[in-house]
Length: 406
Image (cartoon, rainbow, N blue to C red):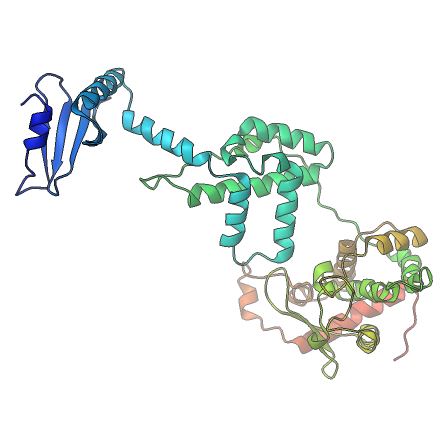
């Protein structure tokens, strides 16, 4: 042992035959000088803490002097004597520094970039959910959103909409799970180990929101159909004819609202009497045969469109956007309160009532069958969907009291 002095540090040479040399101080037990093979000289302090040796670097020479290093060693060894893992404490401090530089908005954008398969509509929904519930936290560190904040926001937002409050928390939970994998310390450990949304599960605080199951009932279809067909008479100067046919197409195909909006003329094969939806929820192309009534609707749209979309609009997208006012108008005229997704449920309900085979029904609705072993052995050709589509169309027209002549 030697007393570590400036003279000793200046004159000591790198070890020729090993990676490092440790010179321990004979006055302050646990204080030492480490010299690497490359000549780097650093001061260290080490002591057993809770049964394990804890070694921490105090600084490099000559960035800090021997006197400064000895003073730091006194403090570090004192903390270790009290059982404090000083390295863990330093790492925690570094993690907190990093945490306070990573904002909620950054995590959201990083998440969207990483999830390359997310659709535009999903991204829009995620941003809206976070903005509505956590707008004032967007530019704040993600770490400021703790369990108490989650509980408070969930309760307050739930007063406006319990379903949306639950949804916002699901999105936030996904962001925290992503952050736990995306951001780590020097040892590869997550700096966001705790997910505060878990509080809602631990306390059983999630709102119980029943899934909406509303459909247009058979006895309501005549009035609904009549209101839709006469929609163009309510405002002849608007694009009500486009919206009329859009609503009819959804109820005759069961398509999701965004899928129907984005259909292009090039997606229609009038000779084969099929339409193809390329931008679907499950990312799988969805090909449907057209029944006679639907065929006439599509032909009318193709003959009237002024751009590449079946349901054109002068909006930035070029296609129809959600017709909230017109849906409200149809509801007012018919006395039938409905949403666009109710039209999809109506199609599915009527199809199911006709005893259409299970796999054909799933194909009509473009539901995935990944977890169904039997589905892997069933090849469903579009031609096999012609009869089911025509049966559903005929039943809808029957309920609506509409006669269609080819």
